[in-house]
Image 1 (tube, rainbow, N blue to C red):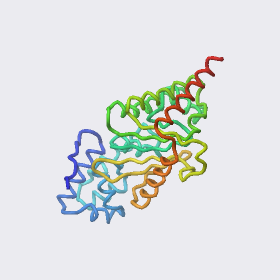
Image 2: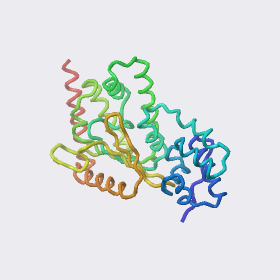
Image 3: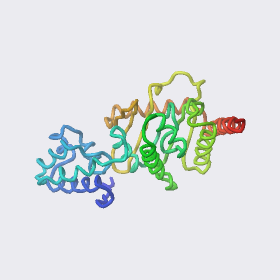
Image 4: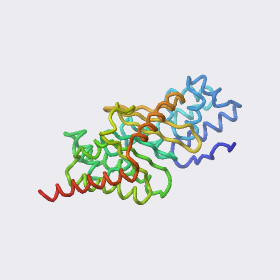
Length: 280
């Protein structure tokens, strides 16, 4: 069995804390499960803190300083983790996404953030915050486009998205914005950077009808699931819960069109939007 991946403490504040946590835990002769007990978390969660896939909270930092005799190290450095360009409910998920090996996502209403164009993202954020100053919208768009830089790597993370047909039919921004957005997805798929499928309306009722689902796996940490609602979001790592969400995703995939048929439907929708735009 391979040992834990060597962390690069200079890569981020979370990597720094994770490397120090692993060093001090091993120095104290504690297993991840044993250290998790006073924190009221699982050994897997401790492993996620050490690998940098989960964000350390202040109360956890305080307890770690106490248990590991760290002289306030974790509390002092935990403050750096609070600085994020993302909304509070999504910040931890975005940070986990950045180090994921695979990302599987079911999108019920909108093109997933990683696959959005600038114009589409701007229209989404303006709809979310109709009275916000333009500079606020600009910052949100920049952060979203920076997330999409993950796809500049030719292979990692592996991204598999299932789009509900509603994603294709809901006009966001304008017909021109939709045409360009769908063609962007087609380009990514045809360049073999992502796998994309469409769940057609004809599939009827299914397990994921209540909302968006994102599954993430990692090289040296247990998988995570992220569920998002209206202004809310939560990461899940409980193994039984993860198995349920993995089954949900698998059944959605089974009901979706094949990748080839999905691309044909996306292309048809893009052409319809382009034709509509030309009529104005």
